[in-house]
Length: 83
Image 1 (tube, rainbow, N blue to C red):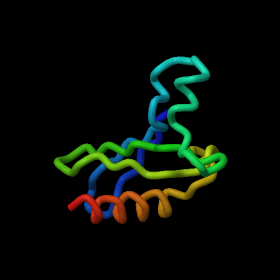
Image 2: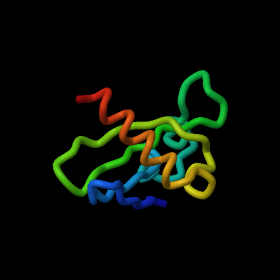
Image 3: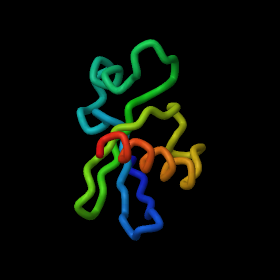
Image 4: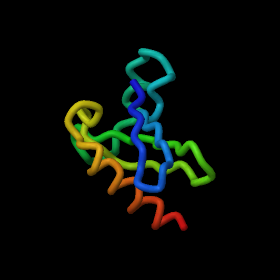
């Protein structure tokens, strides 16, 4: 399930676990896992504006238990690395 949040600049980010739209095949679900990190998954956050999408690593319960502030901090940090 996607999660939407808006940063201080007014950009709305839509975050979703990577490969979540590929169906219920266990091999595809495993593709989103981060190698060597138990319970950590790749999450892709796509902006509403002209910024570039970012990929961040989050725990499996990120949709419910990671604060909006922490997500935005991680998105901003990853965006700076890309620039």
